[in-house]
Each structure stands twice: as C-alpha cells, then as structure tokens.
Image (cartoon, rainbow, N blue to C red):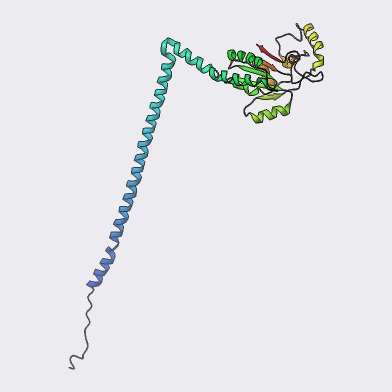
Length: 268
C-alpha cells in the first residue's frame, strides 16, 4: 500500500497536439478551394457576357450594312430604271408640293368659306390658287395677313412663304397661333390719298429712280418699299401676292399696289 502511495509519473504524449495542430493547419483548405471555384464561376460569367455582346454587336452591324445596301440598290434602280424615265419621275415627285387632291380639298374648303364676312371671295381664292398650282413650291411673298394666311402657306408646301403686314400686334398674334409662320411687320411711307401723285411721279421717273429693275433697298423712288428685312431683297420671288388693304381710308398707309386693287397676284 505504501508503494502505491509513492510518487507518480505523468506521461504526456505530444503526438496528439501535433495531430491537432496539423488539423488546424489543414482546415482552411476547403475554404480556399471554394473561393477559387467562386472566382472561376465569376470569370466564366463575364466571359459569356462579353461573348454574347460581341455576337449581338456583329449581328446588328451586319443587319445595318445589309439594310443600307438594300436602300442603295432600290434608289439606284429607281433612278436608272426605264431608260432614265423613272429618275425623271422621281425627281418630279421630289420637287412637287402638295398632292393634287389635298390641294383641291384645301381650295374647296376655303372657297366655301368665302361667303362669310372677313374671308376672301371664292373667285379670288380660286384665281390665286390656280397660280400657286402652277408655281408651287416656290418663293412666295404675301403683303397682308388675314383669314387666308394659313391657306397660302399650306398651298406652297415645300416652298418659302413670307408674310408682311403693317400691324405688329397682328403679326405677333398669328406667329403665336401658327408656329413656324415667317411674318414681318413693315411701316409704309405712302398713304391712300397720295396715290395720284405717286403714280404720276413713278411714270415721270420710270427710266431713272423708278425703273422696274433695281435694288429697292437703296432706291430713291417714292413708291419703293425699302423698310423690309434686308435678307428679303436678295431672294428671287416667284410669286408676289398683295392681299389688302384692310380699309380704303385716305389717311391709311399701304404699299402703293394695294391702293387700286383689293386682291392682286403678280407673277415675276
């Protein structure tokens, strides 16, 4: 019994610690493998997206090129077909204004409204429309604003239509009511009561200051209208329409051509 109660020897095996340490060292291996798999999946996804974008871009570019080629082929066939006749027809269609049936419909409605007050009589509407039918699209200069202003602009579809009026408030009103309308306010230097003297002076100076062909911007003729915007003097007007005056009153100021004729079409 005494022998059993003597000193005891405790033996510690370090191999277990090494094993534990070894397990602790090798435990991150599965985590690192999972991380690598994740990066591989991300790389494959990005590669797939880039490949698809490349394929779609190439297909779209090819389709656009084919479409442009087809347009070129069709235009070439249209311009060269029929020994050049098709090209002439295409050019005529491109230069044409409104279709004939649209033109006729607009004139018909405007002529029907000619019986109401404030509108141009039907014979005048049809007379002016017949001129515009032959000349439109063209450069059209209109003296005076009124109920037919949208009609003249529509009948000259594809051309340039400029309106002049002595009432700046009415010009601003119609510009706001009809976007894109090109209108200018002007100040005339002649009055209705001066008409006989103006005509006599113009006849006397026909070969000098009042000759028909000259630059009106710098003309000394009393009948010359030199208060227009400068750019309007450089335009070769095909048709000039004098639609006015509003009232034949001696003190009113108007362009001289409006004194004798209420509605006048001048071909240039």
